Image (tube, rainbow, N blue to C red):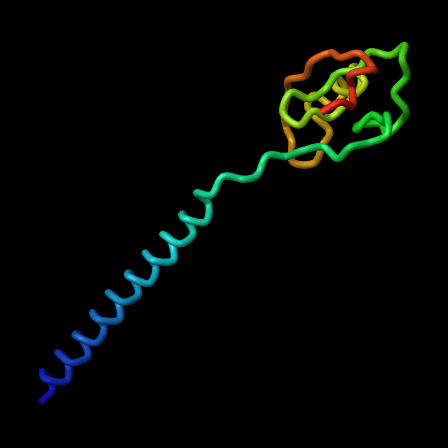
Length: 106
């Protein structure tokens, strides 16, 4: 009788272990599928001639650059000081110089 009880407990324990592994695998697969979706590209909100980093007005006599990924306008000094784009979620380190006239055209 003692051995019968042992085998029943052992079989139940093995079933629980297998079910736990299967549920764990499906949870991991679900998490992987959720991470596999590429994030949307970050875009800067249109502003009225303001630098994204320092929030001051962009003047015609200043050097203005735009982020290569999200097209956000920056003073060149602000971009160099920050080391990357100042838009939340955009970490681009590449920018192109533009004239003030073309800085806000998309």
